[in-house]
Amino acid sequence: MNNEYDYAMERRLRELSPELHKRFAESVFGLQNILSNYLLIFPTFTDHTELHSLNVIDFCNKIIGAQLEKLNADEIYSLLMGCYFHDTGMGITAKDYKEFSREIDFGDYFETHCRENISDIIRDFHNEFSGRFLKKYSALFDIPSEEHLKAIIQISRGHRKTDLTDENEYPIALPVSGGNTICLPYLSALIRLADEIDVAAGRNLSFLYQTDLLTNEKDIIEFGKHEAIKEVFVCEDRFILAVDTDEEFVYNNIKKMASKMQKTIDDCQRAVTNRTPYTITQTSIEIRSTKEQK
Image (cartoon, rainbow, N blue to C red):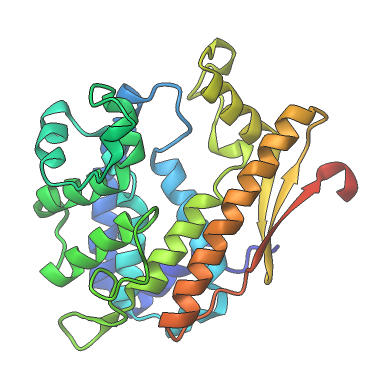
């Protein structure tokens, strides 16, 4: 539970490739306003700005730990970019929504969902919209090659729902110029886990939201859970949710959240263990009362 791995990927990328680090830093500068656009569609939704992206990177650093030495510059650059791009689909324009929707396979989604409820569609498929956004606007971000672009798109899409065991979608060693390869299943599993555990109260800063004005039951439940989870710890063998609540309803909803997190952990463990030379050492999620820690 220490700060040993704070900014580890950023520092390592600068050491290995100052050029890729510069490209990444310049992309982040351009993305900040774009990420805030999600508030136009989801004014009461949990934070998806660059603050969330920073949290995801921080959790990735902690989950990777000492294995960072095994990652090459192209892998680190692609993962960092994916962490920043993974939620760009939450704030797309109406024009892009129509264009991207023609390319996305919604499966049988509309058999049980309304086509007119665009905000729900964007939320449920925002990883796919993020991938299309990146593909369309990639020239704005000075991405070095088509291979890097493919990697960043797949990592962004991979933060939810996609099948990380699909060898065509997520090859173990995607070649890039210069002789390096990018291990897409591992990097995508990292961002999926990091995104899943970004649930602490600090994610929803008070200056961004007026939580006392919430009326939607789902939003009230979500903010209640986040408010009660004071911190998320990344330990060597588990993730710990530090919870402070006396409300049974809130606690039960956190237990449901933890069950969903465990499924994500299991899925990521399966993909990484079976398909890559890497390991994810965290195998479980634990709920711990802050009162027990005092």
